Length: 336
Image 1 (tube, rainbow, N blue to C red):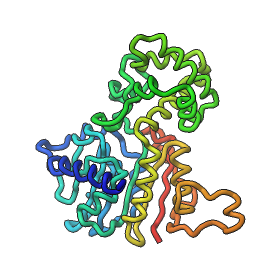
Image 2 (cartoon, rainbow, N blue to C red; image 1 turned 90 degrees about the vertical axis):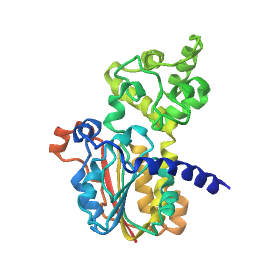
Image 3 (cartoon, one colour; image 1 turned 180 degrees about the vertical axis):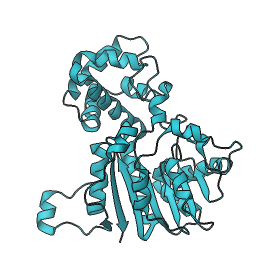
């Protein structure tokens, strides 16, 4: 039953794909440079080992920088699918017959590949970082640089519960778990208690970035303010968008969609994502086997050959040109 519900949602979203496959206005390159600078572009292309006649998927289309570079390496027979659940990404759709844009969360990768009749793809790229666009569009509530925006943080602004709803509806225990597990914050319990007390003093509850900052400011060290606030906002964003659940579904779908010899190229930006990807490539599951299982049965045979034993990081030049690449870790694997 769950599969059919998921499939039904995917098919409904396909109605939007047909409309957006060929936009009426040409893409402006200047917009892309503002929207998002593609991270480790050369390393990603090399990792995909592109066959000009092959079929590829960019599950995090965003500004289209990676996709544009992939299409340039394809022949007239090649195909590229780009996924993005954010309606803002539609402004960057490529004007190319070899490209199909899918307005959907990448967790539905397998559903859409089945719909389009693709019995196997040659490479899948996932850049899991939040795009520069999301941080720069202050009204989306992803950044703490401005205090006036509403607490939203939804990647898909048309659906789901926003950050304000979570902060106002979750009890202290649930908020504490969220900050501890998704933000890896040691003072998670005190942060949660402070938020609950503060929201009770507001007639309309917590609604703006500024109100959240006021609720937690006394518990944050001035020397680590940016780091700790980033962890708080990361935890909320992960919960709002079910990012880790979607990542698990996408990784499992990628294994099923790739042909033998196909490449999976994934960039992560924090330890929670990277741990999941690392485990998936090493063991075939996002959770590592427990020590007793490893001792009794040994490590399970992985369906992947790891091309990068250790993750690649941005070069010194790229770090200088694009500081937001500093936390990126790139892992590449080939399906056995």
